[in-house]
Length: 546
Image 1 (cartoon, rainbow, N blue to C red):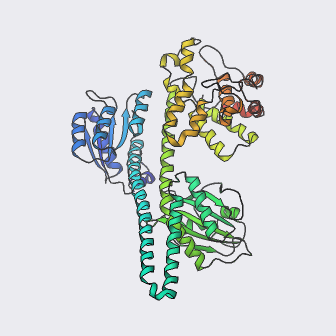
Image 2 (cartoon, rainbow, N blue to C red; image 1 turned 135 degrees about the horizontal axis):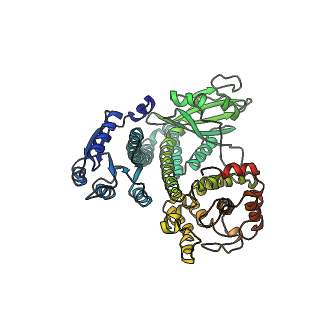
Image 3 (tube, helix red, strand yellow; image 1 turned 90 degrees about the vertical axis):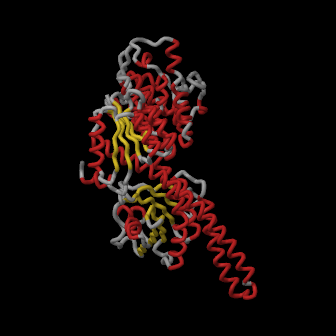
């Protein structure tokens, strides 16, 4: 294990871990490896699942690492019973056989990692570390949400107290009313900001709203809110708003994450940073100068309990007023109110990324069971992305395309092995089974609220432009735009891939089919965009993952 990985795993993750494997040698080996990975972990091992279940019901454990296939009680049953007494325990699976059904059931039960024997001990240690960290992140999410609700309650209580003081101090009307009025305005402003942010969970939407609120309350040419990733010590996602423009807040893109410069300095020191001349400043990184070419900047850290989670940056042109103490006060107060909401949304965003990664793993496992599908979703993504510039897709459409291309065949889990590996042309009944996969994939994704749009795209990726497709026989622009893009990319990869009952078409023959089916199976505009992709690019993609 490298020093870097050891440092990551020993980052305050003291935890109790139970290893369950019916093979004593493996149970002992895994326990010793985890103790060596982090001496602060309390690692215990059991070879009998029933003994392990008794211990889980009596003692508090943070993580259960269990073999799937065990006599008497399998690992999935053990995990299910363990969750009855401790619904928050982290789960990691070990298995000698990577059965797709077991991996799907493990995902539904809440297993965060699924390692196949023989496994790398360092990978196991990292998997346990990730599982424990995710458990702590969920606990932190609940604590932060409670803190946000408490802050709102405190603000409302403070406002009520101030109103009562106003009535009591009426005899000193001139001085007291002005002082109390100012206090009430500040509290009301903070409460209004907190209420505006509550309920917004999409990270980009929340950052955009924060940037708009800051730009409206503090005079500036542009207001930018950036995330600071503590583990990477770098600035990642950024959203910028322009108060004088009617355009919606937009993402700001950098060549790579920033680890130095004005924003990192503000996050790492926890202090405001003011630059009077961007072009001449040594504090501003070269990549930051591409975002703000001239003028003056004010950067204020956004922190929760002393931990920086982001930075707010105001920009004024060279001829604009310098930033003063009142600007810093307003921006600092807004950052304080926005911090808990941003942290909550950030945790939710990371959890979504983890779920997407798990779904990708299922897709890859499903493709691995069929030699003719290996690498299919990656090639479909590459083909579809080549069409993007010609179609002028928006940033949300590109994001939806990237996710749906990777998950479009997730529903193939409903197709039995006998159909997947059928050596010849499929029967009518077998075709009906295959045709269920778009609807099955959509239903699977709809269970996750944040994948609703992707679910609709996946459901429609086998619809035909002339209305003869499936499952809903939609036609023309009734079919989601991204589904029409996927339809061409998916069909082209199918045509240029071999099947048990036919050979693969060459690129030229497949392109001819795309042109011929324009207006029937494919949207003519999408077919034209695909036909414009250079032939050498198609060749490179075709060879990927085979």
